[in-house]
Image 1 (cartoon, rainbow, N blue to C red):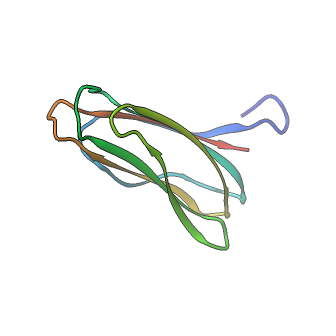
Image 2 (image 1 turned 45 degrees about the vertical axis):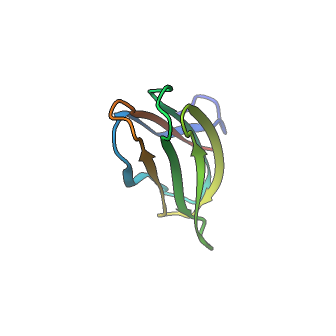
Length: 118
């Protein structure tokens, strides 16, 4: 918990290091109450010399009116970071999946995720 009233609070944090395959839909956080959340992502491919590789993440959530999803972080060969602010209904989850393709057997990816209650 934050010591400063009204300050953002980290509610979930996850690291996927040296991954060699796509990540199926995975729940990051389920909201006990309705509110605004921020999802910070940092995605990097570990072999910058490989060509033809691709990786991207997709978030899904429900704001109480619509089930929503979007691809927010596409690293290709390299790195990318993104921040997404979303509204989450009580009892609904933020889920993440990651697509990964590499023609190289040496290429892997690292994905770091932080979910913050605003």
